Length: 181
Image 1: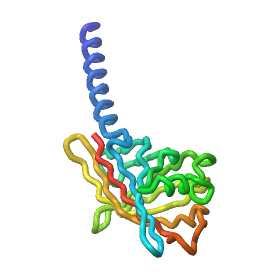
Image 2 (image 1 turned 180 degrees about the vertical axis):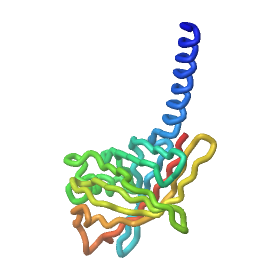
Image 3 (image 1 turned 90 degrees about the vertical axis):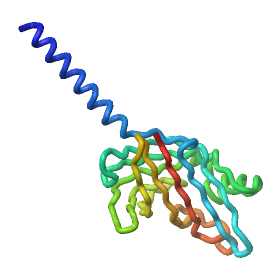
Image 4 (image 1 turned 90 degrees about the horizontal axis):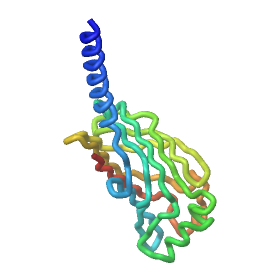
């Protein structure tokens, strides 16, 4: 009887261990290597592009994209643009004020299926303010990995960045590409 009970306990532990591995395998770590967040800002006489290469987070896709959870923290001091002088200006109090607000964070709340793919809704905290945003996304799961791609615009004034409204357009184009394993 003892042997049977011990064998059953061992089998249960192995089964539970396997289930735990399956659950944790759905959570993918996000880094600057597998996640790209790029931006394009426009003005009357042109545009500038840049990125946020230093970030961390998780993308928990699970079995159903509508139940996925995304959490990303961006190191704003790592911001880069196509012009070193502009990079410095973007980090200044005129824009992101990275010394005072060193991180930006996005945490998803809901992901809904639609005819084009999905709509991701969550809280974006940036420049000391939190605002709910929604954006379209294509989300896929394959070969033990998860991917998300999206292009959308946000208004910098929604986070209190109003410098140069007569020089720089309020809306900036964001491109997000996640390919995590």
